[in-house]
Image (cartoon, rainbow, N blue to C red; front, side, top):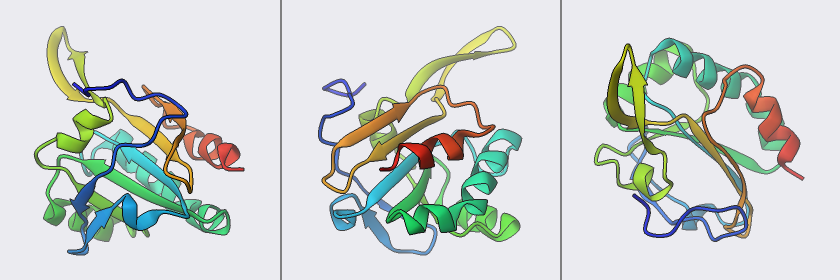
Length: 155
């Protein structure tokens, strides 16, 4: 669990993770841009694919607003690369194989499916301001229309 509860207005926890393209991506390296950091359970699953494709289809709108979209899951960079190739995704996916960043952002939660309880990634999005502060948090994201909500929040 995060040592300090993540809240809007707080400084966003820094991170440095490998991306599908082999580069290391850090929050510090993105200062001056809006960052849409979204956490999702698994590459190439129905809900995650729909979410990724909706961000793909609106990427030019995010770019116009000086925003970068980054997806994060526990999948490997290799898995991310296959997911990106299959769906022509046009943004980076970050591999948090240890779950450290997922935990820092409080996106690792108790979930239940078919009557079984387990720990997993809660679909969550964090909008980080160009100054590195959390501008908005969405938890338990419903995929339909979510990218529009995020775009709307970027001033």
